[in-house]
Each structure stands twice: as structure tokens, then as C-alpha cells.
Length: 109
Image (cartoon, rainbow, N blue to C red; front, top):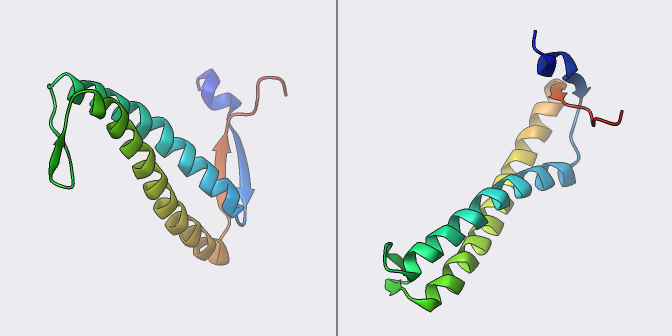
């Protein structure tokens, strides 16, 4: 076994707090979407990418601001949608069985 597998700790839970599920999903979606849309905004501002909003192309300096803002709104929408469905699924799953999670404890423990 590698050192990573040895240091992983299992924890068994019946149900996760909904706030925790929302936090995990929002962090994952936001950390991915905002940098991606920032790069897309840069590419659209120099004309290397076509970005359309409501059927109109967004290019130039407007793209530097509008495309990352669209990424923020999209990450909020997808994060909320995924979090609600994941929470409901985990609540239903928790009624039948417990869930075993594996995590890495903080280095100072």
C-alpha cells in the first residue's frame, strides 16, 4: 500500500448535513467554471472564440467582462441545481443505509 492509502481514514455517516453537500458541490463547480469562463472571455476578446448571448456575438472588451460574469451565473445555477438533487439523493439513500466516506485527515492531527 502507498502512503496515501495508509493515511486515508474511513468514516461512516447516516446522513450528511445539507450545508456540507452544498459547500462541496459549490466549491467544485466554482473552482472549475470561473477560470474556464475567464479563459473563454480572453479568447473571445481577441477574436479566437465566438461567444453568443441571446443570439448576439460578444467580442472585444465586452467579452472580458460579460463571459466571466456568465460563468459566475452558470456556476451558481448548476451548483444550486446539483446540490439540491445530490442532497435529496443522499437523504433517500441515508434512509436505507449508512454511507462510508474516505478522507485524508489534516496534517496537524
